[in-house]
Image (cartoon, rainbow, N blue to C red):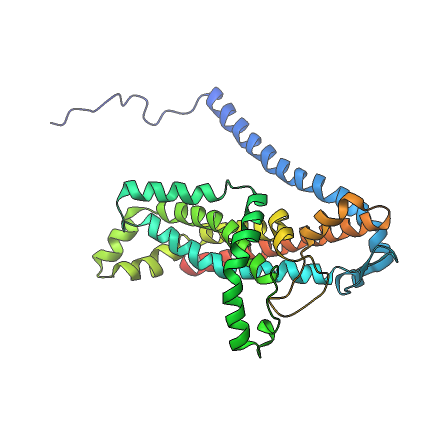
Length: 318
């Protein structure tokens, strides 16, 4: 005869009115927080859009496709900054995503002892705490001199390719992309690592029990299972890259011209606003707000596309 374990008198009892009220209150509290986030976004977007109206009325959608930025003649166009924002962010992701995902796999699996893994995880997280102005100074005095011989070799060897057709002169799109990759790396790595580490161990054991190797388990089982978290980390990193101000301003060269070469100076929307807001007035302020609204919409579009990708991948593996 098996003796009962613990007190089983409460099994199956109905909840009290107090517990029901607490559950209902918690649900409403989470709803308030969710709508509060939407309200904060509106509080940010509406004042920017309101101040951008004069520039929108004067330049219309042509603001997005023209290159002139002349405060004296009050002629403004944001295409070089939009181009610089997208290209520098793409370079950053092209470097940071493979490195971040590889580091996340290395730190989440049993490749090294747990003590060493904790130290490396802490060091990766520490990269996110470094101020952007420090990254900018490091980029000027260390990264650009380090990259110049590499860029010069690429220019001499592959200068016939348009994206390498400009001789490197120091600040430019490529160094800015590299510094943005370093700045986004800890965000992508930490979130991807947490997503992989939070997966149930049964996935690994079941896959290897069926005869799969460690690498097949990682790339065909674990990464698809943690795909939504990995994409979330990549999108947060992309948002950091698109909105980064000080480091990009110090490294990119601040040239309001479109040049297909990655070694040429460029500009971003965030750098433009940082450089010109202190002495802007009148229509120039409205044009800067218009550019800020464009950056806001770009990040929104990127996040919507990321959510669509995550939904499609999740439906494939369900």
